[in-house]
Amino acid sequence: MISRRALLFASAAAAGCGMRKAKAYQGYCLVANQGSRNVAVVDLTEFRVRKIIPLDAAPSAVISHPAKPRAYVLSADTGTVFEIDAAAMAMTRRARAGNTALGMQVSPGNDALWVLYRDPAMLVELPFATLKPARRVALPAPPDDFDLSEDLHAAIALSGTRTIAIVSLEKSKVERSFDAGAPASFVRFRGDGKVLLAADSPGRAITFLDMAAGKTMVKLPLPFEPKHYAVTADRGQIFLSGEGMDGVTIVFPYSTEVWQTILAGRAPAAMAAVQTSPPSFLLVSNPTANTVTILDLTAQSLSAVVQVGSEPGEIICTPDNRWALVLNRASGDMAVIRLDRRSRPSAEHVMRYKSAPLFTMIPVGDRPVAGAVVAW
Figure 1 (cartoon, rainbow, N blue to C red):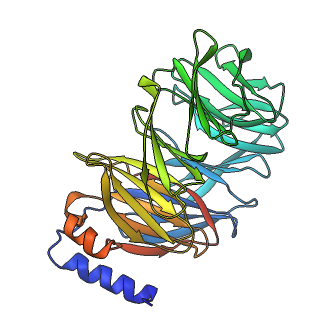
Figure 2 (cartoon, rainbow, N blue to C red; figure 1 turned 90 degrees about the vertical axis):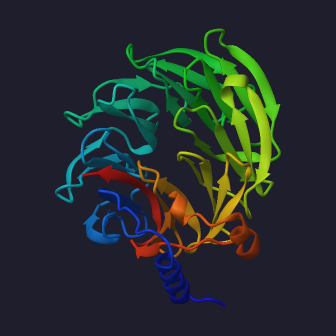
């Protein structure tokens, strides 16, 4: 059995043998630690924790400001949003519009957060300028998931029903609703906003809904219960994983096609799609195996299997696509994987060793569950 210390020394030795020095990212990764109720500020130029920012509630999600060195941390259990100033390394403001929340997204105009609350059931706008609740949209039932489109609409899956509510963000009201045929575990708009994809986990299917016609276009079967997803930057491809198969299914939203399913390690979970020049990669966490599987999407083949910490979860990629940051929930650390071309192992290396070197490991806190990268 190889110890973590031995693995790190081996990785460092491998990095020093023939590979060009990695270019650091000028920014921070803010990591939400659910167990210790704090946010760790990780300096990505030195790969070390610069500061721990305590919170009075357990964080569940983090999202970065689209233009400023700030991030917003959601505590789902309390419905509170905390603003973190990365430059000052401090919590500066907070907002709360309900008792429990499910998630948050940046508005299409990049000027606000929209927060989905479960108690009470509503969608709330928090403008960045004030961070005070502004527009509110009451919902007819508690929600499960939501997504925003560029044409200023929100699609909200309503819990326990087959209904998806379509909300006008401009008018702040529910305009209409879809019968999806089954309760949707999550919903995602196609890049142009004309088609909505709804995942039916119990039914092992994905449904395509025509936004203009207000009806189902097609419902396609999947080989597993869709639970996790990742999308490319242009939303031209969606990747699904879930219980029932050790694989990832590739979906083409523009051709309403479930293309193929490829093996992606044991019990694939959270994913991240990375576009380099070329090829493109899909990083897949395997929590039960403590690994991350890297798939070459251009060649449709295995690129590497990286041994990380215990129970890897969310995968965050830096905007320059040079680094992947893997949050290991059980071991309380962040694995750093170098993604540029010179760090990728050859096909022969993968076939022989089925592994790739880890760049470094950074202890961040108790049960890290989410993170976001903020540039300086």
